[in-house]
Image: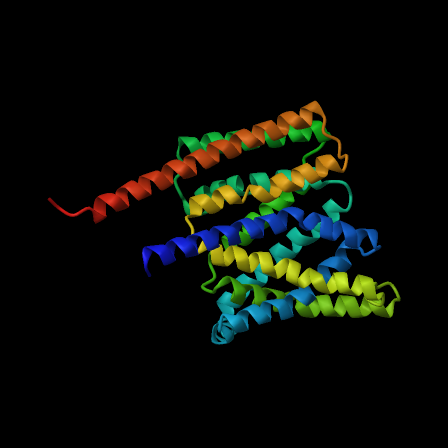
Length: 309
């Protein structure tokens, strides 16, 4: 690939990365709209799973990964990992949907701010990855921010903790699966799809479902593409731009959600402001550490590639 083509692909990958986090930042507004239509979090979750299946299938076909899907289904160990990851992401989705419809958008923002720091700590505990001094400082700021948030709420910010742990756990489990994002996502949604279909059939039988209304039905069907498209954009971008840059972009979506929560009038007391200030300090330290590590890697690569004199 020529330098100009490589540069063009990098710019396109950066645009894809920004787009996926932009969508994730504004997606609370989509689920809030469904909530105003009277759809419960569990019904939204079930439709999100069901309509993600055909969307994911389209992306698998476009990527010509049908054989990979068949190979994954024939591997019991891989299927077990994907079944676990599907449960974790379902927990994450339903807590997120419930939170954005009950005035807890700031708590969801906090959860996704601390998520990368949770992953860093999990890497040290589960995989014995070394955390340097900068990483320890970042985690310390995050713990302090969570503690102050607990004081502000009068209880542990369980929404933030569940979102961070479930999404962090999802990422850790998916690292154990040798399958592309599209393939894994399709198998995950298939794994819980039958349960979702059964629940929706029961709901409609009880005259409690909302799929009968044409407008609401369109919104519920759109929950599939809204779920799958940013995930595919993320997967495509992550393979083509440095992880340090993706690490920076991942704070884009909780920042958008944070401002949406404030604009919607969620309580933002001085104590809560202190909590977010501590979290943002942790994020800044985390990003500095990622930037410094990327500089070290680049310098090492240049040293290896330099011609011997």
